[in-house]
Amino acid sequence: MSLFSSNTFHGQVVLVTGGGTGIGKQIARSFGRCGASLAICSRRLEVIEATAAEFEGEGLSCLAVPCDVRKPDEVEHVLRCVIERYGRLDVVINNAAGNFPAPMSGITYNGFKAVVDIDLLGTYNVSKAAFETWLGEHGGNIVNITAPFQNVGPTLQAHVASAKAGVDSLTRTCAVEWGPRGIRVNAVAPGAIADTEGLSRFENATEGGSSGRCPLGRVGTAQDIADTVLFLASEASTYVTGQIICVDGGSSVDSMKIRLD
Ligand code: NAP
Image (cartoon, rainbow, N blue to C red; front, top):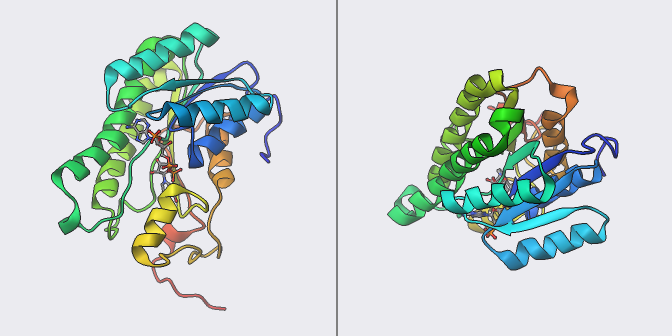
């Protein structure tokens, strides 16, 4: 359950890419529970339709539009559908991403490109289309979902880290260029998040991975991420832009990995 009140986003419209599963789904649900009308998109229509039906069953309003964020024409179609259905757009969450843990030597040319195309190019495509369709004239919020490890050298994540480093850079430039238009652009960097596709793939590849080995001693939850995203899109953060907030139990600042008790 979110800490925000049920009318924090009343009257607002929120688009979440990759909103049919995992972290994106919980972000969308949390906005919905706080009064927002929702739109979710991803490639698999059956997945987003099932999630939208689940949300509708919970009393939320949700539009599901199939889209590959790598394709600008499909992205523009999503934006048109959102404006047609709701007449406005307030918040965009760039959450869609690809991931498969692999060492540099094991990543194919196509595999590396696919992750960069989905994570980085997809974030660019959706942000640009949202700006041109609505946000550029009316203002709003963009929150990009990034990762906490791209400033070091994460094993098995060369493709993801490279893409997310670009997402971080895009976050800052969009914040600076679009701030005068009333658009705030921030990013949230999740650590290991329980019950997600991303974490289970990493755990399988590393036989247990590193879940829970952080100063706060637990894996995160999708709600941990959703709460920070809601904060960044809310009136509680109107002077915050261009920032990347790690929600990772302290992992990214724990250089010694020593536990004193
Ligand atoms: P997930 O459930 O696999 O979510 C990824 C979503 O993106 C899926 O709904 C997928 O749906 C969609 N997607 C993938 N390719 C797409 C494309 N080309 N066009 C449109 N949608 C696409 O993964 P998750 O673990 O919740 O991750 C969500 C976000 O958190 C990602 O940005 C990830 O990098 C970040 N993150 C997660 C963790 C973690 O521990 N899970 C840690 C750090 C960062 P379709 O297959 O239907 O397209």
